[in-house]
Image (cartoon, rainbow, N blue to C red; front, top):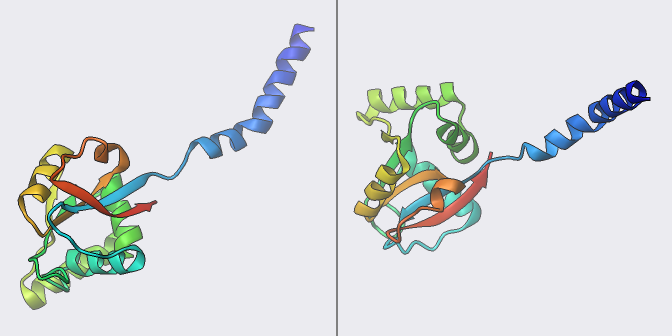
Length: 154
């Protein structure tokens, strides 16, 4: 009887297992943060497009005239890869190619990479045109000097 129950339970777990874990493994949520004094009025695709142009240094100022100060996350980190894919629309190799081209043609380098979220919050909070990407979990500890401009998931 216990053998039958054991095999039935195992069969049941095999049937529901993949479906159960597929729902548990949800997409991660991220936010692009800006300095709280940057009173930019953008949302949705307009915000994403401006963020993309500023981060890739195709533009150097926010539409309100503030000098942009983009900060990146550590190369290869989940948050940076999600940002490059979902906001910039670039793969890792496309991003590398973009920065190689920018270095050759305009002398521009990629935004400074910052690891710890508390350092990132301090930097974005220091520069009125500063912006960066953080996880939703990191945003829970954000100081009042930063605010969310744009949310996305991977």
